[in-house]
Amino acid sequence: MIELGLRVLYPITFMNVETQGAQETAGWALFTPDRVLGWHPTLGTDLYDENGILFGRSIYAKPVGPKLLLIGDSVTARAQILNGLANLMPPEITFLNGGVEGYNIEQEVEFFFRFQKDLRPDAIIHQMHISNLNARRQLMRPRDGTIRLYSPRVTEVTINPTLYKHSQIYRFLIANLASRFSKDELKASAVESLRRMGDYARDNGIAYHLVLFPVLEPLANWTAYDRETRDYLLNAARTLGLDVIDLDPVAEQMISVGVDPKQGPGDNWHPNAQMGEAAAKYIVERMPSLLTIQPRREHFKSPLGSQRADPMATR
Image (cartoon, rainbow, N blue to C red; front, side, top):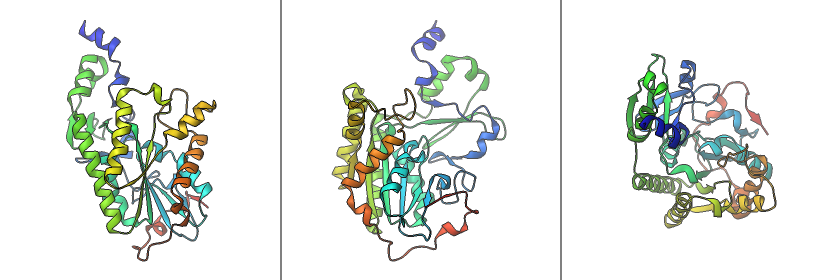
């Protein structure tokens, strides 16, 4: 009866357990387990370069001028807003896509310090998401064939594949008891991460801007949790003295005139190209300094020249 009840009341899609990549050993090559991050993209592959940049979804100016680094989760990684910014901003700017699917704020910041900071960007746009006060789990099968669950700041959990395949009770226990964080813990880690980024940017003369991406539904339809998350992240950023732009008015305007901002039907989390363009315009209007980014006086040796022969977008 418990098994049946869970299948009805708590389908696995509600449990925040990522199953993509768990079925195929080959998918493991794209991820690397990490005790702090939980996992990170494997670097030096056809997706991410050695500096944690999605080079196929970045835009490189030739010759290289000022560098704008975008960090965040899947909204950043899918590059709709990046492409919109590139259409509005000066052609000498290089746009580096440092987004990682499934990351929260703490992971995004740690990934930056671990792999991206030596790029010495001239400006950073950090795109937060309403969903970022979560700690997602990644279920993967490494080369030894053992399925394990990975989550930030938690030692990996070995999964029994037979029970996971057939028992909803087992899946429920894994999703809800393994690597679970309280809401207060996630709030505290997010604020500390934003403080860390803000301090680093100020100390190194880097323009650091925050953008908050909304649920792509009218605000009146949001859950109480999502509305509270929005208010919390906006207030936290402003308390830290950080520039922050809320993109909810952009989505509200598009929806009010009958324009769908979603990447796909039912996808309330990811923008399509129209939403990306509208969001970029809104960002530039409120952060006009982006249009006049200047190279910093001192850069480390650019790693761009070491990349393979041009699978990248070029302006």
